[in-house]
Every structure is written in C-alpha cells, then in structure tokens.
Length: 160
Image 1 (cartoon, rainbow, N blue to C red):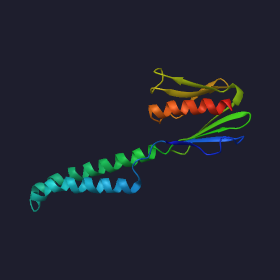
Image 2 (cartoon, helix red, strand yellow):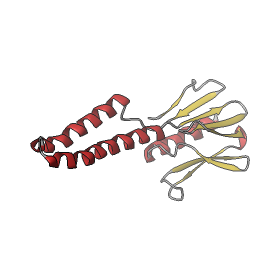
Image 3 (cartoon, rainbow, N blue to C red):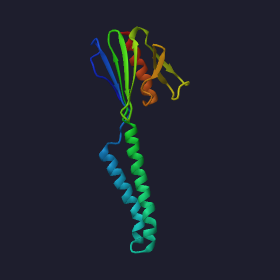
Image 4 (cartoon, rainbow, N blue to C red):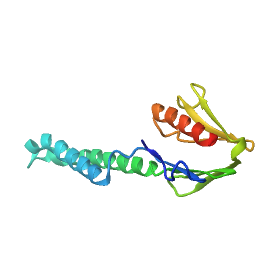
C-alpha cells in the first residue's frame, strides 16, 4: 500500500505519508530501454552494409529515445509526497510536488471532515479533507481500492 502511518496509533501525534506507486526502479528502466533497443535492432540486422540501414537508423534511435524520455518523465512526475500530521488539536497536510514546491493546509482537528465522492470527483472514490473554508484532495494518485481504505483509515484516525 503506498501510504503508511509512521507513528504508533496510540501516540498523541500521528503522521501519515502517501506516495504514488513506483513499480519500475531505475535499474529496471535501464534494462527495459536496453531490451527495447536490442529488439528494435534485430529486424535491422539483414540491412547491415546497405544504404537502407542509414535511412532507418535515425527513426529507430528516435523510437528508443522516445521510450527513454517518456519513462524518465513519468518517473519525475511520480515524485509526489503527501504528509498528513494529526496532533491533539491540529490537522496539517503538506504536499510536495515533483518540482519541489509545497502546498500546505491546516485545520482544527475537531472541525476537519473527511469526504469521499463516489462518482462526482475527478477520479472514482475521490477523498478530500475539508475545514477552514477549504477542501483539499488527499491521495488522488492512489488506486480506487486504496482510496476507500485511506478514507476508512482517516475516519478512524480523526475519531481518536
């Protein structure tokens, strides 16, 4: 599950960290790009020594570069971290975006509401925190089942 409570449940301050799935590590990405390069070159082997190879080679290299660029960009886009801190009186959410900028939200814990939109949100089972006149999303990058579990965990944590 790509979220975890980092403090014990009986502690007065609770901290929840959320992050997107990262199923392809850096070494796996390099192996995938190398495998793609190798498999793309197999049909070009009979063309060795001909002028046609030089006509195809730029397009083959462009395809490999496109795959590498897309995987690298996707990896950067997954560098999101959300940290929800619940202490005796406050709920504090900090979201660190891929570019390093942060967004923060604070609310009195007593007035904090956890809302789940079954179908009305941008994704199914959309979970938000509402309080102090603002409504902020939490865990929008999680899968549908994980957002349902997150909603239940947040309800339990706020009741403590």
